[in-house]
Image (cartoon, rainbow, N blue to C red; front, side, top):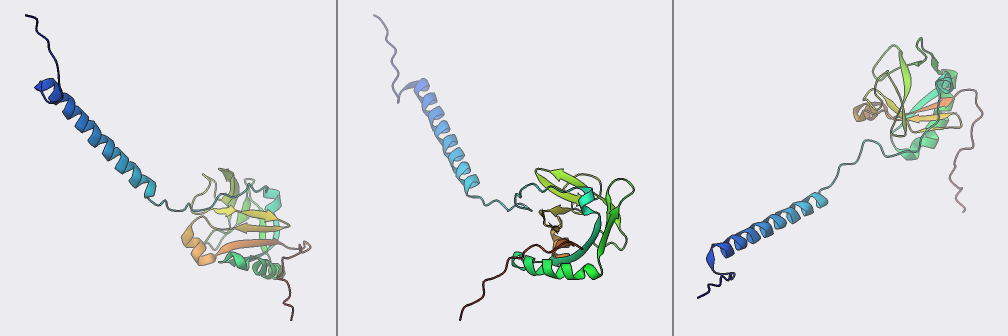
Length: 184
């Protein structure tokens, strides 16, 4: 007599092993699916600074007399530019540094330090020599018509001093954006 070996899902050790493997694989797939859902729904904290267009500025552009102001809300920028322009009677003076940088004040310092322009990831920073985007740096987010807008990288410094605005002294004022007059 010839023996025939058949395997059914319920009988024998081979069927039991396949069912156990299938159960384990189904459980592993379910865990992966759940963990994937959890990572998709987690909220990501916003980055320190939003991506900004590249700013073109040189050390020579920085040297000179500047009116200085600061703001905390973006809506205050036009008013701050006008106020900074008024401070040209007592300008913030930026001079050349001994090592091709510029002499400027860092936060909480009473004497100027030599700062350099730095680039990283399409962003321009000014700060002490070293890597770009460190807490002592300011990011230059805008340089147009003789106006530099430069928030501090360190949020605690920005909380104390606001976003810095430098307005070139002796330069004709660019047309300011004004609100239309109310008709009445």
